[in-house]
Image (cartoon, rainbow, N blue to C red; front, side, top):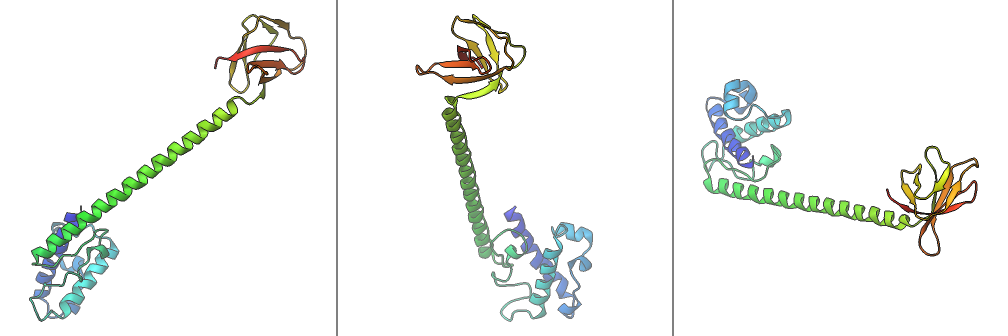
Amino acid sequence: MMNMMLGKAVVWVVVAGALFSGMASAQDFQGLRDAMTPEELESAGLDNLSPEQQQFLDGWLRQRFSSPPSAGAVGQTATHDLDPRKIHDGSGSVAAGDNGANDAAVTGSDAIEAEIERRVALEVNAAIAKAAEEDAAEEAARVATRDEPFEADIVGPFSGWGGKTVFTLSNGQVWRQRTGSNYRHTADGQTVAVKKNFMGLWTLTVLSSGRTVGVYRID
């Protein structure tokens, strides 16, 4: 892409020399779109210029060829006058007929492309590192709350427990009875409190009756 833009810059200088060679004054020049056919614009790679780029190029051509430099032929220009950065998002400069300037511009553009790639890589790595930190923080928060007591409702019909009863809770967790006690639930309400006892084992207590059973989580 960068080499293509530099190539177009050379074309512009050549086109300018051809256009102004047949004009008495640069004031006669109304713009490339009036001076060239659509086919010529496409062949020169100038058919896709934005209005701002077109305006800059037309103004540059008028200024450059209104008073040709005394040291050289029309179409020769100093490298700092033709700056593709003002026309495209590229970098470097091109002087017509100056291969050394072309090579320097290409080298400069390659360096800028390498710098852009380096900065993009830094941003990507920073984003990955930030995402990893956020994931680690979320996991730490989950671990920290894993042992916290909580309350929830038993989902579905509940008549108590006996043996290996499974408790599906309203928070999406599923627990299973781990002790062999039996309980017939006749009270109103199915809200339970789940917490660890002094031995570090989980228990489930039906709040409406105060009955407790040992449980362990299965999902």
